[in-house]
Length: 257
Figure 1 (tube, one colour):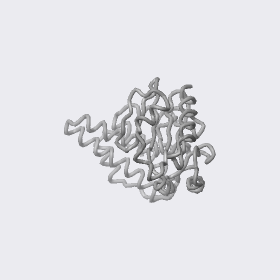
Figure 2 (tube, helix red, strand yellow):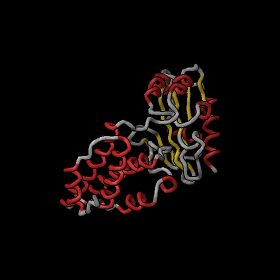
Figure 3 (tube, rainbow, N blue to C red):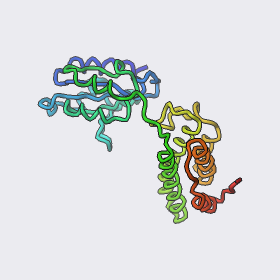
Figure 4 (tube, rainbow, N blue to C red):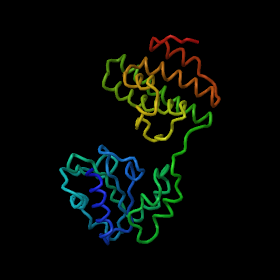
């Protein structure tokens, strides 16, 4: 895979760049799950007094010929390497290493993530992070997750009725993500929690996949209502019965209870 070549070259550049205080690799390849469709992903922490010298596009082009380098809406530089294969590069400074402590998890062993740590500042911060994200278990956390699903679904239903179908699609995408989280909790399948659609075809039952793929608010609600009730039965909490009845009416879904 070209990704292995890109990773090796990025590591080589990190080790040879004296402007760089630390660097880490994250994502699928760090976690040992990378394949031919995966991105390559790095955080680069330059020394503050040298950061202004760095041209992100030029740095990425030294990894491999870049068809395009764009700064995305999150401030990350994305390079399109041959294939095209995406490379994500965060051009930060060593002063930003402290912010790593606020990541929800690291997702991979420290030794697979650490590329350069010239001052020994990055390794202890990474080591202090949990390898897996926290999974909601408490009744109030479950209620919040399910409530967010209802929030996006109700918005989708209302803007659909107004004729704003594109806006409804956007709202349904958010509802789908929350429905997948609900299904993962109910199925005790939380390995890919932060990106609940990842490997969903292999890790979630066909009924959930059909509901999400349908793009049908009624199918979303039918599956979501069942998952919500299952989570309440397992973790505790009170069903918002009036809201359930109103959503049944809005979607035309019959409640079997």
